[in-house]
Length: 60
Image (cartoon, rainbow, N blue to C red; front, side):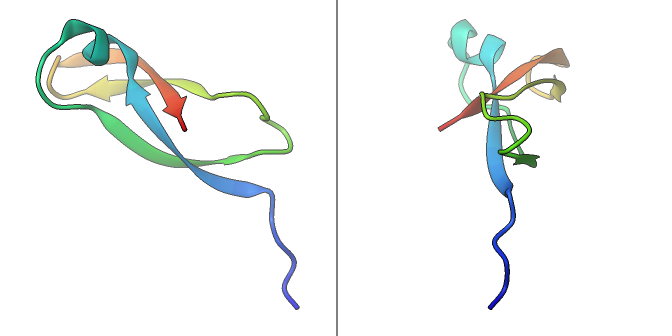
């Protein structure tokens, strides 16, 4: 039987875009090690709609 890993797939969503009320969303999919990073992840990523780098936070 195969061993289950600690890596899980997470979705990062832009916090500034959500607050601005503009239509559409900026989301990225990445993986994280849930053993090393148990809390929600935050990364700076490019938002194509706002045309700038913004903070993206893990959802669900």
